[in-house]
Length: 314
Image (cartoon, rainbow, N blue to C red; front, side):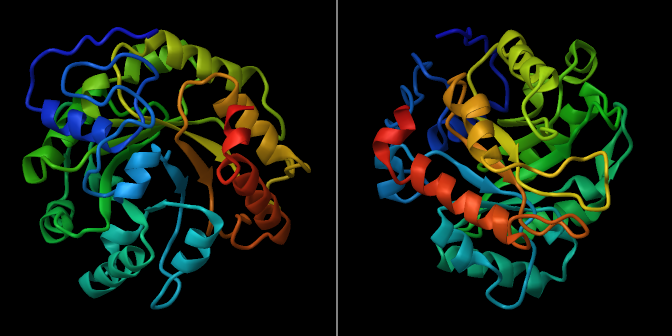
């Protein structure tokens, strides 16, 4: 194992352990009480017994919003997605939020709910607005809920580690049983020096969108993740899966781009098998839902990498 398991006793341990039991953590010996590695997770809440037995990785689709009573969940599940993220769900009326979670549950999808829209402040005294706590209280027991998404790109928004910890602990006080995810695009040592707090999350998501191919920034993202990670926790690496017609400097994706990204970020480095795709519903950008070419490319990638067991090892 390339990373030490330096973990001091703290109130966050049960949540972190639960996250590792639910997801694929590191690829080597695990601390006592944790699953040994990919493919050895015991059945647990939020995953079916079949998924756990197979060691199924997270396949996360970002920005899945509510599109009618059933949403797009059947389509997503048919494409091979098993987890969805919504940036808006916590702002919806209670009935709409419950309808979204119910529809996801019917299709066997897990939901990551974003709470960062309710953040107030960036320093040690920051907090969530009361709406966030009410949302947690109302939906923490819903079977489709998989994780809380505390913050997005804290370095870019200059959100201090003390604030990250405060928000993490606020969530855990209300719901100690679900993991907390933070999402980052750190590709600079200064981002890690000033804004990386390993005790402020249970799941670590990273992304650095290609333009249109992996380059130096994406390489730094992976190198820094390896160098700065000091304990075992689930990592999700998100791939670019959108075009931005109104942003001429954001070059369109090329044929084979999703496969190229998967090889660069997931298959070759071997850091994690958990993969995200950004994203689904991204107007005015065009995500997988609204771009037929991207939809076909995504379906082909899923067929090759997730439905062909031999291809996972290539």
